[in-house]
Length: 224
Length: 227
Image (cartoon, rainbow over all chains, first blue to last red; front, side):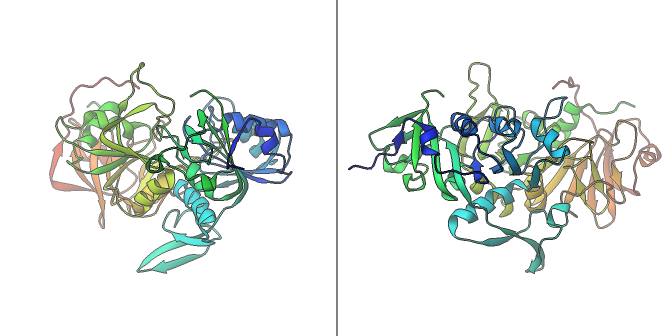
C-alpha cells in the first residue's frame, strides 16, 4: 500500500481525541487559520480543552466557536483582547473565571512550541525579563544579562492551514500563511492540515515548506 | 503653538530611519512611518508574523487575505522581500538582528522603562503580541506616543505606573510636542514644536528634562491626520 495522507473526513481523523486534550491552532491575522478543521472539532463536542493559539479573540479565527460552545478550559496565547465594543466570548468567560489564561510574549509562545517539537524541555529567553510575565519563573544570568526559563509545550492535536498538500503530507504555504504552523506541526501527536488542494503527485522537493513526516492527514477544502 | 498630529509624529520618526536598516514597526502610529521615509532611502520593514520586507498596504484589487502584516492588514511584499515562519521571525528578533523597533506606548520612564501592553482597561483581555520580544532585543527601541494622556496626565515619568513591557530599553521618544533621547541623565530634549517654551514642555512632563545645547524646532510638513 502506498502512503496516502489525503482524507475526506476531518471528523473521522479526530476520533482519538478526548476531553481534556491540548490542541494547537495555527494562524495569524486572518492568514493560516484551519477554520474548516476547527469547525469539525467543535462538532465533536469535546470538553475541557486547552487551546494553544496566538490569539484567543481574532475575529477571523473559528477558535471563538470552541470558546462560545464552552469547550475550552484554558487558552495559551499572546493576544487575548477583543476588538469590538462588546467583550469577546473569551473575555466574558475569562472575566467570569470559567476559562484560564496563560499569556506569553509572542516569541516565547512560538519558541515553546518549537522546543516541544525539537526535544528541548526548556530554554532561557531574554523576552519578558523584568515584567509581570516572568513572575514566579526562574531567572538566570548569562554573560551579564538576565534570562527567564520557559518550558516546552506539546499537544495531542495540531490543526494547521496550508496551500498545497501532496499524498505524503508535504505542504506549501502561501503569503504569510505559515506563521506558527510549521512549529505546531512538530509538537503534537496528531497533525491535520487543511489545504486549498491536495494532489497525488509529490510537490517538488525544494518547494516543500513543511515535510510531510510532520503531517498525519491532509484535507482539501477547495477554496483559498 | 500647534501640536503635531499623528501623521506628523510618524513623519518625524521616519526621518531618522537610515538606509539599509532592518526596522520593525508596531501597531498604530508606528506603522504609518513607512509611508514617510524620505524618497530613495531603502529600508527593510520586518513584520513579526514573518514578513521581511513588508511593502505598502495592498490596493483593493491586490488585497490577499493570506498575506497580512502583524496588524492583520492586507499588505504587499516589497521588492527583495521574503516570508518566513513565526519561529524564524522571533529568532531574528531575539537574536538582535533588528536595528530599530518603533513602538507605541502608554508610558516611558526616565530610565528607559517601557509600558505599552497593559493599560489596565477594565474587562479587556491582555495583548502582549511581539512587543516584549522586540523591546528586549532590538538594537534600538524608539517610541512614538502623545506627550500626555487624553486627560492631560504626563506619559513621560520618573517611574512607570503601568506594567512594564521591558525595563531600561527605550532610547528615543517622538511625541506630539518634542523629540527626546533617553540616557543615563534621563530625558534630553533635542527638538521641540514651534511656540512651546522649555518651561511649558517641562510642565506637561512627569520627569526632569534636560535640553540639548543645540535643541532645535520640529518643522513638520502639513499632513492630514487620517487613519
